[in-house]
Length: 234
Image (cartoon, rainbow, N blue to C red; front, top):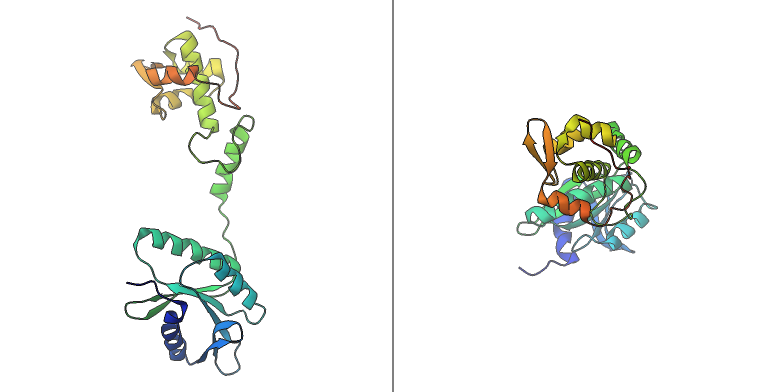
């Protein structure tokens, strides 16, 4: 099926708005679609063959004319489009825009959000998680904007301390590792073994796997906490 043109969206949008009692006309000045109903503020719809930054620029510019501004694109299929639609619906809400799609096979027009003032819902749990990670992170080991692969988190910094202790002292109890390194969650880190660095050699005693030994002999992670060698106690 050929990629739809902007003009292919117009009949469905026009029919949808006319069903709401609007008089609809296309290409009024720089506006793709304009709809008027009695003395109400006009409705403006900007059409595009797909989501693009220029579409949002055009729609925001129309807000000097009316608050009732929508963008409209063809409805796609699959998980990828579903995610794009979800993300752009959230963006439209942030910008005070409405969002419509048209299902090209039958001309079904659907409104996913209406224009309105943006009122973000704050998430105290997310804020708390970010602040806890910020406070627990030692130094600034990551460049802002880098990919998630290889990021040095506070958890990884603690795991490195545990692994270094075991590399120097041999298998040890979790409580001893915690006391020697200052990592209060040492036992949980070694038991969960998120990086496949640790193995339980007997009840409550953990050692390093070959992968763990490679990790501690690799170049030091930027920002990893440094602790002096500890002497194991009986």
